[in-house]
Length: 273
Image (cartoon, rainbow, N blue to C red; front, side, top):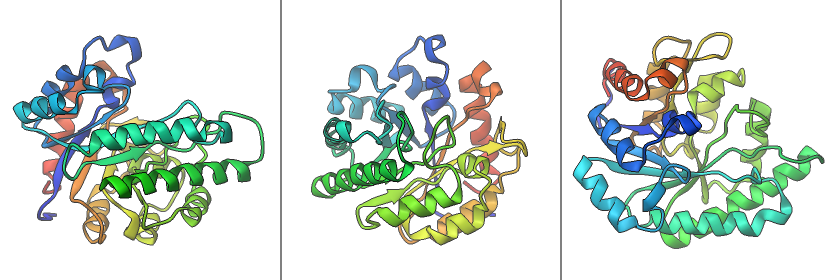
């Protein structure tokens, strides 16, 4: 299939997941992603390195690499579910919203609410919704869109369809968008097309990655993700930016991150992107 005006970016978690095995910095990421044939990058608070307080310098580095900042993603040790940490989480949101504001069109993606303490799930959903909505208010004032990125990682609060329905029922759709992640949706045993279609108005951009039938990460096109269908649904979503951000967490990527993301970029061309 060919859909016009699609743009393909790369998420930096492919390197972040290596932990201490990755000894490079943000400039190495820019080079690998640009060399891989991507037009944009989604970088995280963990990987921004020396540019964290230097958005103007990062803008120069992006320009020299021929890349656009699609989104700035950040998480919190609080999992966005600790009431006593709401103030700190919102200060972090304010910081990264201000950073993203230096890049026209860039969004801020907030990580999945995560269970990091005992207590009722109801309370954790309420805290997460408060953090996300208030961050969305900060974003609106700064002219930066804020979106939530649910995951299937350890202790996530946002795993299956019931969790998605619950958090979206608490979020102000005018303030907080959604970054659907195909791999996490599939690992949550969700009906991909139904979930994407039901919440299509909230879609801002899409994370595309693949898993096999057991939920193990695979290279793009090697698993069960119907990427063509995902693109079709996202492309019709009213607030979709056109960005498809590839994120790779497979063992293949762990062995050769740059090679894996380059291969995925080639695979995406088969979908007209």
